[in-house]
Image 1: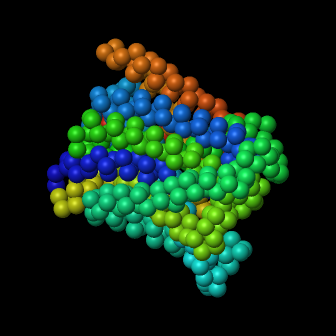
Image 2 (image 1 turned 90 degrees about the vertical axis):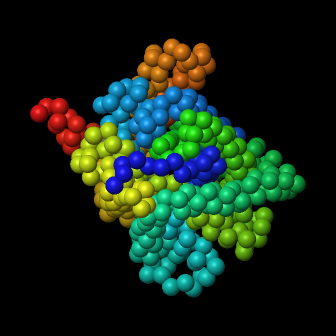
Image 3 (image 1 turned 60 degrees about the vertical axis):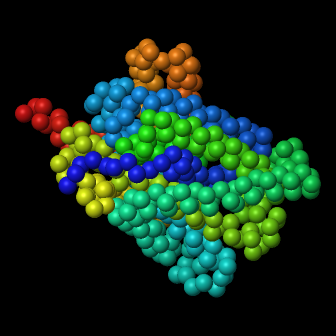
Length: 465
């Protein structure tokens, strides 16, 4: 078996991967969350989307410049290794492989299943389910769990058996998911201006239960899930044609597209329903008000497709996690995990590990976040807290980039990294304020997983011997 991946993806696929991974379910259901966290304050909600997008963009641009200089196997690990050294690169890769990628992938598998069932039950209210849809069957019912497992296994199979097909799936789902977003942005704004709903929403505060003492921080933290995932696109660094040119282009263009789509969609939704309706019923009510019940319910199908596309992109990065460590001679069994199948040109052993660890995180997500079976201190949001951790791990990388890269321009070496550093600190602080003690318990889990990674580091054992 050859242990190198061939360059099979072009610029358009890379852009679709950036856009497709980020634009998933978050833009649909986080709009309701952000309105709730800002107590129905529409301008403050837009500011939260803008702040979250700006933080993503400056981080993204900083890594785009790193991508022009560092290229090996997996962008995130490459950049961590080049700026902070091989040991830090290993722990960054271990974190991404065991926590970041699989935790998000498992949640997207569930969201894909949830919205698939929401669409089915909206079209056919009599669709037989063990737990009726009105009682939460689309969220925690056995049909939802079974469909989640099917989607996760299907995503694994597509990526492991046919990476080219996985790339085409990413491209097609990205194009499909932009249709309802663009339609709502344009038609919703026009409809809202004509009906006066949009103007009224900007001047009227809705009624919400509870009140956050730091609504902007809480709202920006909520945008973190919607904006996150772009770094996973760097996992195809070694499979991208002319990656030193195309990866920075894909990151930059993809980031600009994402921010524009999110803000315009958010405003468009505000034109289709009152703030109170959006808080109580979600974005579906805006689609129903504008396009009618039939077309409005089709939104759930587009959401499902959107989630499937995002899950596919996450699984794409997830499958390459152990491989990115193994080709460096790091982690457990590097000889096994660095193997690439000669027929599929995929690191199948690494992909199998990805499916296993994703299943483990889904088990945790279901028992602690969905079913509520697990209670106690070690119950935390596995979709938001790992995202905040990675922003914390970016900080020393930005500092080292500014210290080492003396051949870069002032903007590349100092301005953007400083802005990215400040934005990352903001995300960490916002997370602590929003999640409070849950951050502490999550960090204990994080520390244990990192310690296990240190024990299993093959390179470390070889050096001692």
